Every structure is written in structure tokens, then in C-alpha cells.
Length: 574
View 1 (cartoon, rainbow, N blue to C red):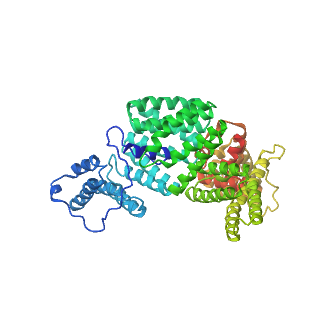
View 2 (view 1 turned 60 degrees about the vertical axis):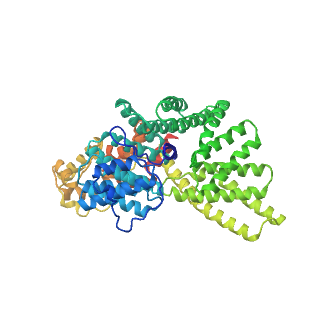
View 3 (view 1 turned 90 degrees about the vertical axis):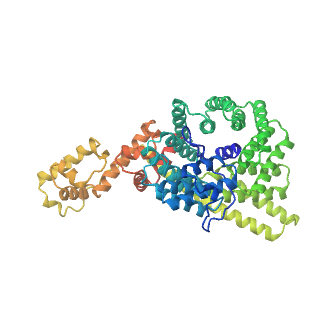
């Protein structure tokens, strides 16, 4: 049972572990169970209370048949009694064994949430939102997954359930880690660890957070920090949770590779590999990660036979599971290069085709992410290789015209999207450089051409309003939030009609455009001059300069500059 959970932890699926006062809740992928008909409560369970049935469900969780019987009895009894909390528990527990029947699982979880939203309970609906977030994540819908985790965070905080609050922070951090927001993820993992250390919370959930933090540090190239936490995990797992021990050994082995301690890396990875290859069921993603780094190690040792062997094992994993992982992409580029080096065009063409399939699956799985999947492989070279291989195979008559046509079509479709991506990147880069051009004069409003209507304002009032606007800009009062024309005009000792007329005439903008442009000019300058400001999240920057939401800020920034603030910050950091 623990092995299945660790498999979930390593690939980044959400952890649903009730630490401290709660039982451990793990979601297994059970076979479907007929619940369309009315469930008949067994005579032996007629006198059991809902709490007793809940405890029996947890106790017999690994026993599929008994778990189904107890959880369905709990739900049926709660319906009879019209017990809202019992219904929330029952719907949630029954959802666990629906396997990949996602619509039914989500429907049960929605029912659990609906009946418990107003209960102000310590666990519900927070836990059902968390499980639902995990299901959406399993489906590849990261946006909805995050929405559910945020709801779980809100309800657990409202109920003052701080253990579950920090568990949910772990889930959000693991989602951020998976989509590449490693800095933010590392900060959140550290917060969770600090809370758990302070409250003496240990066990597999705590160790999983340590594992994730170590892996985040390794990917951020904080190799010594990664080693520090891997060693803590190795030591603690030997005492508390032996099955997670091999994950720490593997992760430190990978970290040692990037520390260029190749023999120590090989020893650690091989030591852990026995555990993963013998596991039932197999943790395919972990095996892919291990095989990839073993291939890299044997390339360093100039052992071409073992180098190729481990790359081929990754392809076998893909064929076995029909599931693509990010690391597979790198392995296929290595296979393409290997067969190119020995002039084996048929194998080279086969693995180009495999690479395209994996790209397609990864693109579908991470459709809501800001992907960089194709960036690691040189697309122009791939095109050239494709043309050379097809020409060579035509000459050798070793491949049919149909095969060539299919491969060409797949490549064109794949590369069309890539071409559009790079077109946008060039366009963004040009706009970025324009923003950095210090020789470009600051934007100034053109002289008003049409003063029709402004004559209704007396010269003294007009002069006062222009002076107030100048002071408004100088003192950066435009950074305040919720500015409106009525209040601003009142602070100037005038009215909103006069103020709007003056701004329209002299600034050639609406009042809202005028204030937002001032804010964006301020942000652009501050991001360039203040490295600490660049570390803020987009939401924090937005609030700092008066926007109510990160979305409104990003849209306004893009409208004025032609690029998004996240891109601008990234390029400044580079």
C-alpha cells in the first residue's frame, strides 16, 4: 500500500494524508463497482453507526471488497437518516474506487461538497475539494485542479484546521513544481516543513514534502541544499517509512550526477533501482528518470552498450504504459543522435516518429502550461535530418511512399506550432528591447489639438487642475487602488466632469487609461532598477501598483507594452 502512495508522491500527484489527528487517506484506483441500483444494507451492519462504518472503511481500505461494502453502507445509512455530515463522508469515500471513471468520481465529490459547504466542519468540504483537485490533476486539467486546492485552503483555514491547511499548501506547491514554478514551490514546501517541524508532525507525508523540496532545489541547481534535505530524508525514512527511503537514495544519486560525482551517482541509482524494478505495480515514471540518468552516466563512462540499453528500456516503458513523461523526450533525442552517429537511418526515422508521438501526448497532457517541450531539441536540425533520411530511404527503397507522407505530415503539424511559438518569441523580444532602450524619450502627451469644450472651464480652474495632475504624477498617487474620478476630482477641489474633460484634452486619454499608463510606466522602471521587486509574484506586483487582480494588471501591461509582465521579468533576470 505504501509503495502505491509513494509512486503518487514522486510523479507529483497530490498527497491526501490526514496528518496528526486524522487517519491516512490514500486514493487507490479500484475496479468499478456497480452502484446504479439501490444498495441493500447487509443485516450484519444494520446497527452500525456512521462513525463506526467510517472507521471500518479506513481500517479495511486495502481490502477492496470490504471497503466497498462499508463505504456504501455508510452512504446508504446517511441517506436514510438524512445526515448531512454522513452524506459528505459517504459520497467522498465511495468516490475512491471509481478508477478512471472521472465523471462519476467528480459527481460523487461534488455531492460531498454540496451537502457540507454550510456545516462549518473541520474536515468538510476541504478534504473533498482536495480529492477533487487531485482528480482534475490526474486528468491533466491543472487550472481546475488549482481552483479546487485553493477552495480546500480557504475552507481548512476557515475551520482552523491548520494541519490540513498546510497539507493543501503542499498540494499547491507540488502543482507549481510540476509546471516549473520551482522558486515559488520551494518556498511553499519550506513553509510546510517548518510548520510540521514546529508541531512535531512526522511520517510519510512529512517525508514527501522533504523529498519534493530536495528535488526542487536540485532542479534550481542548489545542489548542496538538495543533498542536505536528501540526507535528512534518508535518515528519517529509515526510522519512520522505509518504503520512501529508496526515493531519497535515487534523488541523491541523480543530484550527485549533476555534482559530477559520477561513480557515487551510479552506486546510489543502482542501489535504488532494485526496489523500483521489483515493485508491483511498477512506478514507470521513476524508472524512466532512473534509466535516463543511468544512460547519461554510461555515456560519461564511454560504455555505449549500456548507454543504449537504458535508452531502449525507456522506449519499452513507453510501449508498456502508453504514457509519456517529460524525461522521455530527452531520451528520444539521445536515441536519434546515437543512430545518426552510426548511420542507421531506419532506426533514426523510427525514433523521430516516437519523439513526435511523445511530443503530442505531452502537449495534450500539459495543455494549460507555459510549455517549453520542443525547446530542448533543435528544430531546424530535426527538419534537415528528416529530409535527408526520407531522401536516403527513397533512394534505398527501404520505406514506402505512404510512410514518408505520414511522417512528413506529422512533422509539418508539429513544427507549424513550433514556428508560431518562435515567431511570438521574436516579436516579444523586440518589444522587450524597445522597453529597455534608454535613449527612447519618456512618453509625453501630445499638445491638445481640439480645445472645444474646455472653454467651459475658467482659466483659473483649468490651471489648478493641471497643477494638481502634475503633483498627482510627481507624488505617485496613481499607485493607490480603487481610484475613481469622483473622489479624485473632489481631492482636487473640482468635479469629475471637469477632471475628465481636462484629462481627455491634455492627456489624450480617458482617466482610467491615464492612471493605468502611469502605473505601467512605474512598473517598467522599477522592475529594471530593483532586483528585489522582480522577485515579487505577479499578484503582489499588481497590488503594489494599485491593480485589484493579477489578470487586470497583466492585460493592461500587455496592452501598453505588447508583452506580458512575466516575460519582461524573465528576460530581465536573464
